Image (tube, rainbow over all chains, first blue to last red; front, side):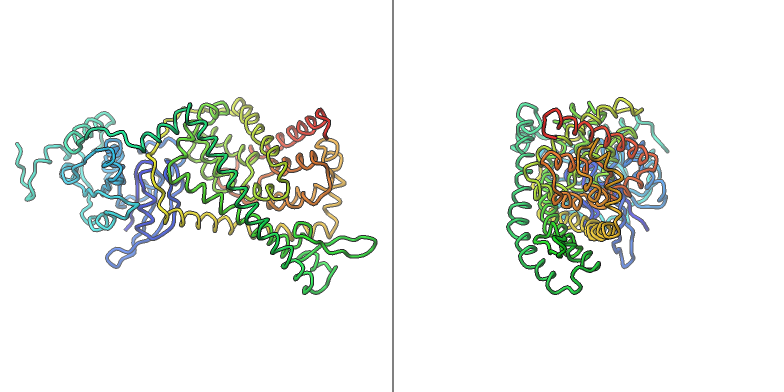
Length: 183
Length: 412
């Protein structure tokens, strides 16, 4: 099993990586700190799992060398799980990449990182509702303070490929037993 | 199923409208500071203040406090005399390589009295690596890490964007440029944040030629404190002149960019500590072996007479064109292995102030050190060959120009 950490530049992928694997990769507060990928290992249910810190990319259509590395990493690992790290204060553009990755048929889990920054900016995201709409696990995190990381790991097993055709906001109305309350 | 971009954005819009609620926008202190540091009127003076602060802390901590205040006393006062005393075979070749090549005065073997002149692996080699370079690198990376984690770098990028466009780059090129002041090796990899091959080539070439690394800065502060400013001035001017020329002649595009300016953040001490440790230790894994190896190679080449031969051979170029003594051949060989070592060597050669200035600039712009060279090769051999060709032209031209300026000023 392999986990890829993907997302826009400067959303905290490297922080995630270091917290997950106990490894040391450089973290900074600006885009483009990670320009090459780094592999590390963490244990999940007694098994060793490979984790890859992928350089930040805005979309799957690469614009620079670091993004090329990112896209190549994804294409190479067809059966990988992807933790899509999104800056909570910039949800929309983060979702763009997440959707692209889901369209490629990967099992995605979404980490709404930098929850504190969003809160500073007075932006609130209903993560449960987002999870119901997308059909993939969504977890709020503050990676630098180690908040939510273990929850992301515990939800990994719920990640599965989703057909984007099935994604409609109608699903937000569904109740917990899976029956649709809407028409 | 796959969506096209428009369908994707439509879907995102409808999702966002269901899950995101925007509260009232609050103008926080962070925002206010953020704006002050990015608007040119206030931002440029602040940037100059930050850079000045950076430089003076660098000089006073590394040079004055650590090196002069402690390591010089330790190495010259205890380490060197002790080794000179206990190491057997004074005057022999092993003694010359490891401890002290000394000097012959009236047929008598005279020991050196400081670690710059001894030039043994265990004396000068260790002194340069630990006594001079270590403190310089530690303080440099500490300050860089703080600036990075606070989130100042992208703001600097915004401020300098217009200027860097003139040389075919854009504001974000400030990141590899500043990283390069620590060590050129990670900076070469950092050029990947630039979009086009043209930009990467220009950046890589400029940083390999014109940007002195932290180790070299540290040693320059130590051995030629009065000239560092002039050396840097020549390098900065060269960076822009040749950047401007490269931009005109290298084919390709230099696109505009949108810079994402993150919020200011309080640096997390654990992260700063870890990053500092990683950078300093990886620097030393590369640096220390090369410093020690450099001492061995240069000493051996001296002993077998190669350096003298090379000096005589290149004398017309060195003396006539560059206006520096032919003895600088030795340091130039060392400069390929380590530039800090080369500057240390230059400092003990007798020459005028202006010759010293020219020689140090030459050592800086001449060939990148072997570690940088290897890193550039990894990024692509075509680029490397191109860079080396540019470098050869630059060294010859710029070296000559510096000599000419000296002549016109009547100091060379």
